Length: 287
Length: 322
Image (cartoon, rainbow over all chains, first blue to last red; front, side, top):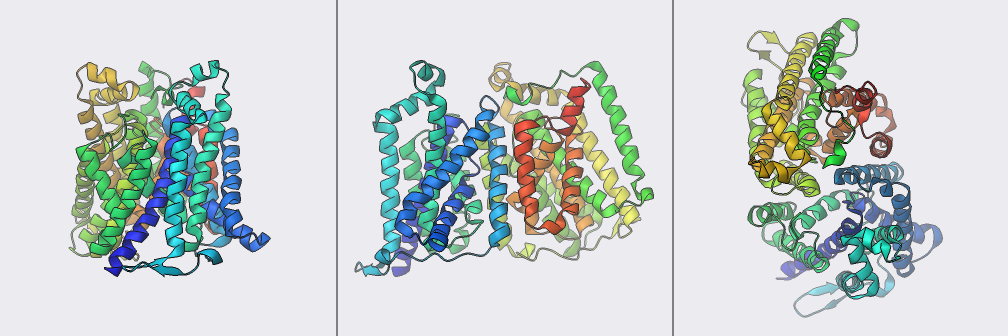
């Protein structure tokens, strides 16, 4: 049973990353009509940012948790201002191709300097060790990742669904021209939205650094799984992305315990099943 | 979907003649390659990728479907052909048949799933499906995992042509390429191709005219996958191996890049694009990971400033469709 609980925990952690990344993808898609292929690369940049902060400037985990998303978010906003904004009005596929190119550049540069092996990033002292829950041993850091990701996801949901800023954002998603007529600066909002989505990815990167090590290609394979998660959950609802992300992580964890050979593929197989039964995705609107 | 084709001109009656002239020129140029002393291995490899990119272009350029998983056809056909040749000891023509039929079967299975969503979702689904296949091939024994299938015998095609001779192999590959190319060309100029273009431009209208658009899209997907698989089978004879690289998503990205550089939705663009990208990889092989960076830069530059691609720009300049 210990092994089952351990795999469930791993599943929840992966689920946190799926949720944080697919949430960002959904928010970005809503405003920019772009599927951000660079999301995995930016997640990796978040982890590297934390690594640099620690090793070059001596800045530890806690400040990195705030600084890295801001730095990568600003990088994302520069990308949006200099490149992505020129694609509005064009076919969706150009956004995918452009961000794929950006991902290749970012990953290639990092691979050049750091190879493909992982760089260690230590767990902060406050979160070292673990506690015995009676039925299992819980490493504190892993528990922290799950709880903190959940809080961030719910905060994002609250920001978008319940605040005035979120209301403007949702309105601009539906009809940008009309929202501009009300005197709201929609282009700036789009830039900030991209920064927010990218920042969430970078945050996930920092969270994963002590667990998965810091590698140039850490986001490359993850982003494809996240795409499958997005296809399963649909991009119509924020809460849908969060729930789908966490549940698929858990299902993956269970698969690792019961049938490890399929743990790499289970999310993709589920995607196929969902497409056959309910093509619009579990929560999505018809595309 | 219209933004993809805003700049292309309607096909004038002269276009078919232009295209036939260019086709004959291309075939003649390719036919004299062995006499020029150009390294034939490079051209053969480029021809395989050119056919692959043309097959991919059939979907994106004429059906508006961006497949981000076309490497799965390349890899699947490669593994099937390699296995048939090496383990079953089949003759080359049967080996190619096994690979191509395998890719066609894969096209049926993945097509049924992938065409259930349009636009950007289609791209994500094909990418996810090819990643699924990548993990399957990583684990099944017959592919030999990370090692791949090595040292594949080339044999005698139809019992006559010795494929171990570079010149013979070159002409076999060239005939295969030209045959595949003409099949695609015939398809896009057929009534079937016209319906595909109608679906690309305005799917709801095509539906309202009574076309079962899903059938057309599925058929186009299967056809594209089958031809891509044929290219993959041919490539086995050139490279003499089949490995996981051919199924990886980076390969799918390269196929997209070739077509984008040459010109999406142009007849000859993918061929030019394939030669450009393969040549670039040859010359820049010593630069390691910088090749990836350069490919990324080309992607970005093409999307931002050069969306018509090489052939698209030429065609636009001369107001022709090529």
